[in-house]
Length: 303
Image 1: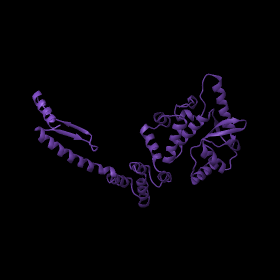
Image 2 (image 1 turned 45 degrees about the vertical axis):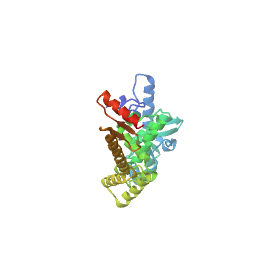
Image 3 (image 1 turned 60 degrees about the vertical axis):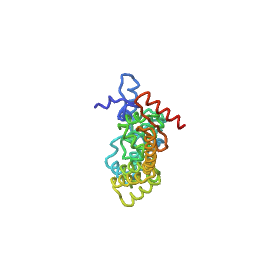
């Protein structure tokens, strides 16, 4: 695809948000923007003129991977320019490319190639979040937090968020549900002590203490996802909720006795239905007006 034909704008996918060159239109504004971007790429921007992105969703970077990237930059240079916005004369703010910027500083570069974009704070946030979700090796909690921030700060619904990041709604929802886990388990998932499969299994436990106990066992005994799922099923079966059917059995026995007595009293099959809270109904069948009169008279005589 000809890069010069890409458009820039929110809501049109990552390619539109982070296009390598500005949109080409017939008006002079787009032409001027293109000249600005090309100038920025060819002349490069001094590193000391670029401030970090305050909307950067990722706070932890693998130091070893950063050093490897730094060495690669030292040998081969920057292959993919970073993206910035202009704040003023000789002053820029990073939109995307945090790792490249940090690695360039480690490589003792003085300047870095960059694309210049026009963006307000909300667009900065959305571009930074989407760029990280799509291009960085984020852990599941970082992705979930980025999704949450996109929805809250950019006022997006799950369907709209899915369109932005190229994921279906169920995938987005699975990540968002991870934020319901206790902080201890979220940290374990972030630190790769457990997988997302383990975390999703733990979500099936309603009791937070049970979740934390099983998490501890999972980590110490290195349980597989299947073993955790089995443990979750057993805990759910043994929970107080599972005792409810016993209560229902007791109610059913009581209702059965009442039904038998009424059947004998009316001389016809009486149906009694009730739930565990003793709410229900009594049905007395009749086949004619005379039959109905007999039932009414029987009730009156025993009133």
